[in-house]
Image (cartoon, rainbow, N blue to C red; front, top):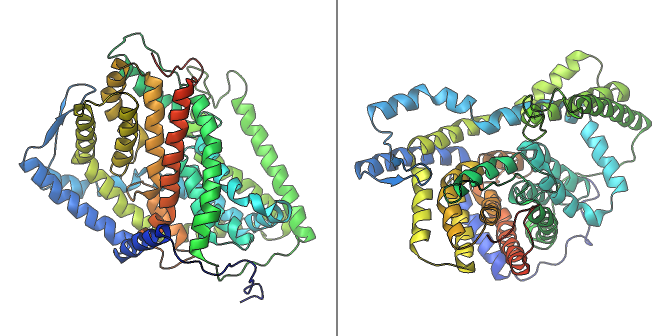
Length: 513
């Protein structure tokens, strides 16, 4: 242990735990009494199989509001169901969306870590960055990372922990801050993300049930989400520094900081040149009007091969500078060293890969049985049946989205079910489709960080176990709950202020119609 351990100025005397701390401690204790996440997903799998059989026996069904088809619960305990469980186990796993993303990104990030590039970069950052601004920087980087779709989960969440550790702060607080930005702020951004055109398309087809000529643009919520970026950053900063980190206490770990050596500085320079060269190369394929990485039909940048291939491009953007750094700083001698570091990056993913196998089966069973869609449609029907209108229905709609997000993680899958119900329903009382989509995104973002059904939740548990062996689902949920609730409350307040002032939500996107 280093002499940096005893720093009385950093740990204030323990205060009397308030009701917030007590309730979070309770959630953590209950959550951690649960079995290992791997076992837990296995139990979830069995539960879905049993519930699907009961629901099918009771012939539970709903009508999909989008196309009037009846969706019935499908039992997985039938000969067909059992055959499907056996024959599709491998494809469920290999087609599990986070799996490829994580493995490909880690091939680049792992080499950057093994060569010492990441460590040198972070030490440089610590030597120049103002310590006060580390929390908001990590949260803001997380929010902005959703342009790269899901790469933020893989790159930024573990990076948040390393950055905090470098500043002699608790790594789990850094991980939580990054996760809050990446996932809790999933809809906010200063730039358009791949999700924008996806949701706008669903909103438009729902709006056309009422008005066949209605158009919803990808920029429908741009102004609102750009302002939300700053809201999420400020709230995340406050929660990290005032609630999450004090609860974690001081971290007993090594974090000594020496000045960079001449070789390391030379390595960083060469890494910079390599990154610059790669960025110029990618821009050359992207910026010309007929660029190879643009959509071949429409020449658009969102969506395009560039966006679809972003994870691979990010992996290369880590790999090339890492090799350049390693050669210049003398941490890589030959290609064998590079191959070796790729291998060791993969071996650090062992637990996650095992976890992903079980989680992928569970998510597949949940889809096959139609239980997720049935839950979503029933919730929507219930809300419609209440007959409430005006701002209260908007608030209830946000809360319904929050609850459904605990069961159906995917933003587009939930919206595909909810848009055909709520867009026309709220249009009939005078609210625009753009408004309905905006409040949907508030509810959809804020719950991501506390639901184990979010596909990336298991990987965050696996990352956290590097710093705390006993970190379970309970610890992670109790870490993230203050962010989740604060984002939900503050974002909803921002929305109602926006509604009251009557600002447009995006270019040509009114609140009311």
